[in-house]
Length: 421
Image (cartoon, rainbow, N blue to C red; front, side, top):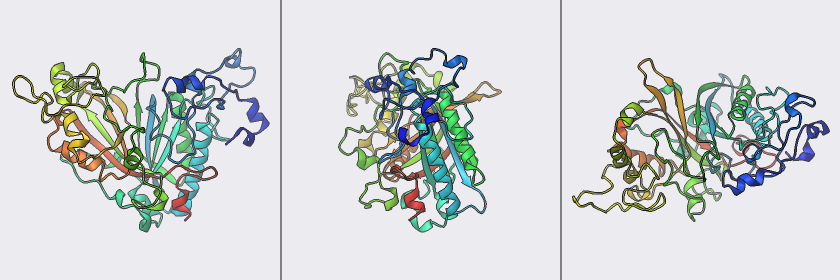
């Protein structure tokens, strides 16, 4: 929605911001834009007295419309919520279309830094967009419930069973999936509540998970995030600058590798992976590094160099043994060890409390993106399942696979090409 689409009253409650460019220059956010609309305190309130421009973190907006949905190639945000919904009994294609229309309208306004509608809760008052993204996907069961089985992609066939799985079906799968990310916790929560409220009687929450990452600006320079094991996590991700990036991550527009309505879309595999941190932290640092195959300090491979140096998988030490062990996580998950299989990993960490025995319920909300999960996630996970040194220290507790259509054009809602064609 442009400034021309809002009322004079809305305009009077907004500030134009001049600091968004600073965020883009620092490499914090893709799609940063100046002049983003923000929530402002009511006139005459204490918080509005003498208020200045938002910081670059708060003012940065990620466009809702585009070839691809936001939240896939958007840099990691500090806070995230994942939530799956099931359509209500009796709800079908008509109700699903109306729901996606409401959700898209709410997401479009909130990602621009505006209230979600007449029933806005006020949770995000005074905050800017804070890189908010809201991403929508469809689970396998969605197509049967809406009479669209004939249009269900083959890529949504169920994931195979893995020996390391301890999956809770109550926290897995779902008709609809929503990923929310923001660099401000209140902005993210506000979006979560708006999405739940807009579901109305059409759909109910199946499961919901909360995650976090390091805040932008918390390090001296932008760098790859660390997970709760203290390891730099995501070094091997494909880069948008690579010539085959789009082919690996997004469904092509020519319709040759999927239904036309998925053009520009991607498939998200979502896994709740609990880290057995007490066991992990009892390992000496050197042993941890052998499990991963990389130095803990800077993420460089054990064969030397920097984080971005290609590991020398054939190098042996003075003892004749491989420097990077044969079962090291970095070796087994490397694309060259999996027929070139690649996926874009974009996770959140999570912590859901400490048990009565003192064990933390913490780990990774693993989210990976690919044009075809049977050529991305599945071959890599099969290889890890057969002998990854990291396996004794993690437990896969929930899983889901979702078709995430391309971005909505201006005037469209997400999924319109599926639901109205």
